[in-house]
Length: 108
Image (cartoon, rainbow, N blue to C red; front, top):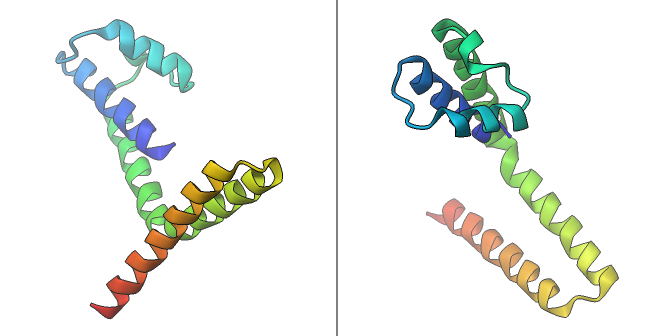
């Protein structure tokens, strides 16, 4: 969510600076993400929003791996309930690879 918001804010910033190539897509993206009208924002407003996005991304950096594992385990449980063998193998492989990756990071 925060990454998408940061990306949209970057596009709004380029729009304010007169560098946007297609403002139609920007308006659609802003509507989808409940942003105010890009023409009503000032450059200072966009800079403040970008700063807030960067802070929230930095906060999530430390808990994101744990959240990803929880999400994958929840997906695995759903797949087991639905008896989707292909999906189960795929998710188990991802969990195994990521645990090996973190183990080797600790070793090195």
